[in-house]
Image 1: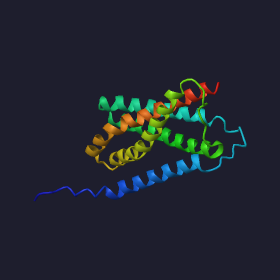
Image 2 (image 1 turned 60 degrees about the vertical axis):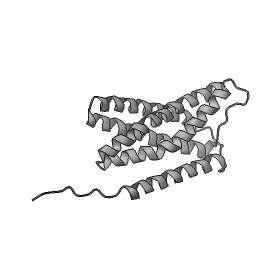
Image 3 (image 1 turned 90 degrees about the horizontal axis):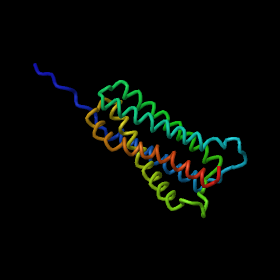
Image 4 (image 1 turned 180 degrees about the vertical axis):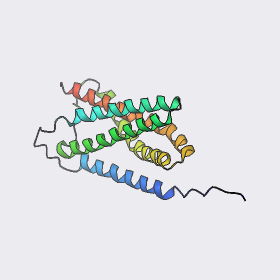
Amino acid sequence: MTVTAAPQSSTRPAIAAILAISAAVTLFLFWLIYVHPASATSAQYAFLPALNAILNGLSATSLLIGYTFIRSRNIKAHRAAMITAFGFSTLFLVSYILHHALHGDVRYPAHAALRSVYLPLLASHIILAIVALPMVLVTFFFSLSGRFPQHRKVARYTFPLWLYVSVTGVITYVMLRLAQGQ
């Protein structure tokens, strides 16, 4: 008697849901930043941009740690590091939404030094963050559902994008603060 493995269910519904959620989050953020009037009545939450940069930095650090673990085939430690990176990125997103809901968009000073470097860096950060969000979720879906061959294929592209977005988040924060004289 031959035993065959049960076919894995289709990933299409899960990936469609991930894409729909990612699109909804992206549209909400665009609305929040560019349409919604910010209250900007309190400096009580002025720490949020610094917190966002710290969370991005912690996410980048966790990603690099996770990468070193998987290269040494320490899957358990890799998984813990990647879940930690995901947690930091999730906290970042919540903090980012809160900051923009309260304070709106912060613009780089028109005549500040390095504006010609800052704006393209920020644009690449934003565009790649939009691309990275569903990729991170799909990569996690494949891992958590035991689809490791698909996980490895997608993670090859997700990792550098996610790392780039995390690192450039810190860099843009520092550049903006320096340009504002803080």
